[in-house]
Length: 407
View 1 (cartoon, rainbow, N blue to C red):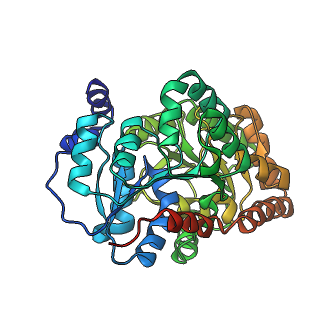
View 2: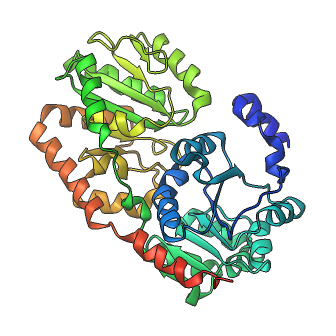
């Protein structure tokens, strides 16, 4: 409760719908529901193709989608509207979890990636519903943490009907942490199986016309505190050689929009805010993307992408979205959330690593200066995306195998 109060103070959206976190919401009449849990925005976007496939594959079943964050909740509502039942996930207290299960009566729980909670897994499995960990990943750091609390982790992992891991290394780490070997399979990452909205190209073209079609543009996406200033410092260096360069900066969390805007203006940049529909002419040096759900649009409107959460020890965010758009990708050294994907992109030549603002500027400058090189690196990144599609079908096969017989 204290943490929730603190989050609400930092981000007012956390102050709403508190009762849902204790499974205090009206009783639901749902038909053989499948419960999909995705913690926040990234997991929700990754789960979107899965949820749509489940709706097509099991049209007679209702889909329940839970998240932990307001931004994740907004994504669910934007992507699915009333076609799914959405509430916040219950806190991992036995009373809250049991109340949630009584009201929802799920016939399967699909948990995205690593959002494992002992009571949720235990109580759901005990109810007779299969529990699947989908698109599962476990970093070396998290695996060490699981080893330290093996007395909790092992029973929880053994409550899972199936762990569908992103790659063999993740699968091995789950086994070492205590998962039963026969229940761990490798599917690849379903994050490769997303599609790009056909309207993105038109919308990005319109943006480019506003700020100047031939300007060099780079994006610092999903930035955390401690990454905005390095991006602005890098942009300052770039402006010396490319005075018309534009930086699109996209903070990861909406509660930081105001502080990042102040950071930009204090640094002396002419800054436009997307939410205010400010004039995006050639004099704008920084565009603050302070809206939700438009990241792919901003990627499509840029030439080079830096993916945040990687210059600080946050583990990095998804590099596949810019890669799918044939963009060169730059990341810092902290990539444990996407370690396998990042190394595959790097090995193919589609991702470059940096460790400082100065190196970030140098990398972006290389791509500004040499268009054929930029296209070559972007194409290499895209080839990796296309070569790895198909994980969703493999995951759906495992779901089919675990699905309770129709009654």
